[in-house]
Length: 458
Image 1: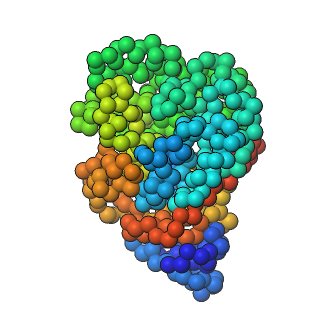
Image 2: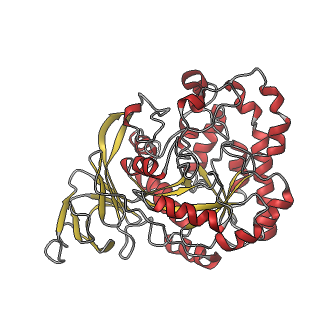
Image 3: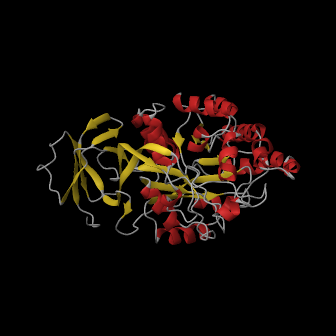
């Protein structure tokens, strides 16, 4: 299939969109949706250079993985944007948001420009880049958070991979008072984590959730919300892991959105450590079953806006270091869609709800322009899935440089078989095709734009 921008009609597929689930034809012109109609209505009525027969498949808006760590620059030994985004498109993902805790961290315009130039050369999918803040770069932050391709500001309230972390409430307040873009937070209290570090001496991974305990997450989330309310700033709490946080967020929905990860919905402690060891060590930790149940309730009740992968690849040799110095995180962008489709097959989620969590939800939360919906004028991003296909996930499928997944051996029903980015097929039947042509996403700015997007989605 040609890589040039052309006219395409997709026929025969079952389209899952904000309109519902129905067999529809989709016309694409110059990388954007040009028409949507009943079966056969577009064939012959619009000029097309190619036809895509999608019979037997469901067609989703292009999936957005709004939480990845592709490690470039500085961590290319573990991952880079080429390998990370190749895994994304193999998993049906058309757009990713990459985190700023690289080396150097993305704290200045120079660092942002350098990273943008590097990743643009070999991104298979479209992307947004987070800028970070440690509280000491407020002058730079005021400018760079509004730069093209920036999806938001990322704040690490607790340390994880890298030393990008803030500790003091005054620093957090300064960040909240600077600019208007969405602030996403890793909400764990660093002071409490450090005070409890002695308990890890001579211990193993089974103590991970006790060291980085529920209270550390709750303290940080409460502090973030208090500062957001003081400065009237929208915030997004990432990888929520506790029942208590779900209740707090539910009571503050006017300013707070949140994300949950598949691993927090699938695994629970201590079984995850018993069966997978340090492969499931991450921050914040996977917790006991009561927290998993509460997260599921938050998803089903609409408190959770987004499910992202938190793709955090580490080499197995780094995961094997003595606790607590083992690297925390797991690869996940390639398995995000299959895991969620399997939840649909098991009756845990509806397909439209999944589409909202990984397509419409990220587009709304982050004020994305032209993404997240199959509607005329939007970028022609599509994810083609076979809901009946059963696959055993294996390590050798993983495109990430680390070459492993915590889901090795897991059988899932539902599989991505095609990925289209702005009208060009990038993946078909498990093969990446063409050349990397991903580009930075457009975002709209300001609370007015956010509210208009929310209203349009109702």
